[in-house]
Each structure stands twice: as C-alpha cells, then as structure tokens.
Image (tube, rainbow, N blue to C red; front, side, top):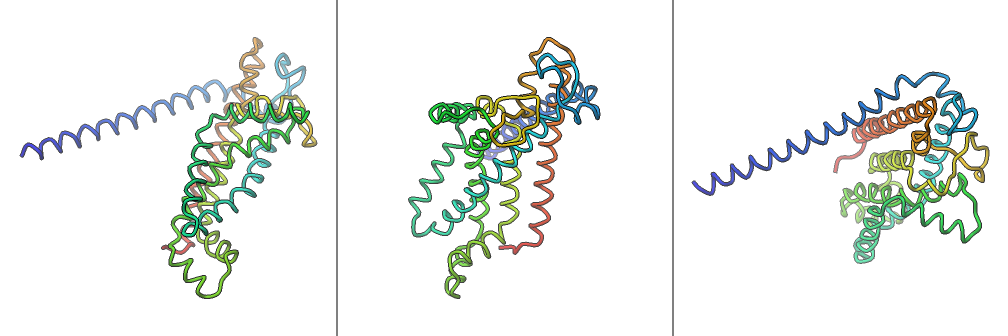
Length: 287
C-alpha cells in the first residue's frame, strides 16, 4: 500500500513539473511573440518591405528592409542547397553501411552531435579566421559557406533519424533481388523517407535564415541588394542587431519590422514542414 501511494505521489509530482514547464515555455513564447508584434506591426507597410534603406541603414530615416529580406533569402537558400548536396550522401552512407561499419557510423554520429552543440558564433569566428588566411573579404559567398557548415549537422541528423526507420529486411531483400547500393539509396531510402528529408531541409532553412552570430563577421552589411556572390549582403537578423541600437526612431522601427518579418518567415517554415511531412507520410509505405 505504501509503495502504491509513493508511486502515485511520484507520478503526480512529475505530472505537475511537466505541466509547469509546458506553461512556462508557452508563456515565454507568447511574451516574446507579443512584444515583437506589438512593436513591429505598426512599423510594417508596403514601403517598408518594398524599399531599401536611404541615407544609411543606421542613420537614414527613410526606406525599408527589402535589402535584408532578399539577402536573407539568398543566404538561406544558397546555404541550404550546399548543405543538402553534402548531407544527403553522408546520411545515406551512414545507413547503407550501418551493419558493416557500425563503429565508423557511430563515430560520425557522435561528431555530428558535437558539431550541432557548438555555438554559431564559433562557426562565424572560424569562418572569419579562414577568410583572413585566404585574403577574402566579407561577402555573400563567405556567409553561405559558413552557414552551410552550421546547418550540415542538423540536416544530416534529421535525415539519419528518418533513415533509421527503414527495416534492415527491406535492404536485404533489395540486395537479394540484385539491386545496387545506389538503387537502394534512391529508390528505397529516399523514396520512403522523403518526408524526413523535406523536414530536415526546412528546419535547416529556418535555422539558416534566423542566425545572426555566424554571419556577423562573414557577410558584412549593406544598404543594397547583392548582385553577385562577392558582394556584401544584409540579413534580417543583422538588420535587427545593427538598427535596434540606433538613436533614430525611424531606424528602430525598421529593426522591429525586420523582427516581425523574420518571425513570420520562421513560423511559415515550421507550419509548411508539418503540412508537407503529413502529406507525404500518407503516400509512403508504412513499415
């Protein structure tokens, strides 16, 4: 009777802690979103999102944040495409060779988890050091490379968790029928785990477009929209970072508007990833 009572008390205690933690997280999220929207929505207008800053991004009272919006999309799209070209083959290799090279695969997963936990400012400092050695200047290309390095561990681990769901028997059956590893990779793993690939890509895109520390020293900042990879570019996170400290109210309004646009983009990506994953899961084979 005493043990049963202790179990009930323990269960009730942990339920209370879980409920309290959930409420704190939801309250903090709502508070952050509310504070951004209440200050940013009044600053949003068609001119704000369709014009570049005039008179300088720090002192100019006129213009908008179009340069930061376009720059963020350029940076996040380029970094995500580069990361996908590297992450997909690595994730496929890890799962196709899981049995024969288990120690190697486990070591790769451990290293990826370590890389995932490294702060983004470290990636930015590393990229900046390499730029100094190579004599490179801050540019869109440098930002794409650094951000790609940042999101590669996230993308690989997201795909890896999906590929783990493929039963070993399905791979063995394919091999017994004469299929090559390349055919198994793209006709079995990629086809059946496509929702996880899409989710990994979208999550990585959201991380890429919302990170400021990794591009602080690598992309620079400019009022203009870049027309080549060698030019500097503005991003929404850096727009918030630089312009929020300006003493001019109109410039601060641009920072709040950039924060709202960035929040909306990240929210749309999260919703889109769930919708796409749910749609493709219905058409994939249930293992």
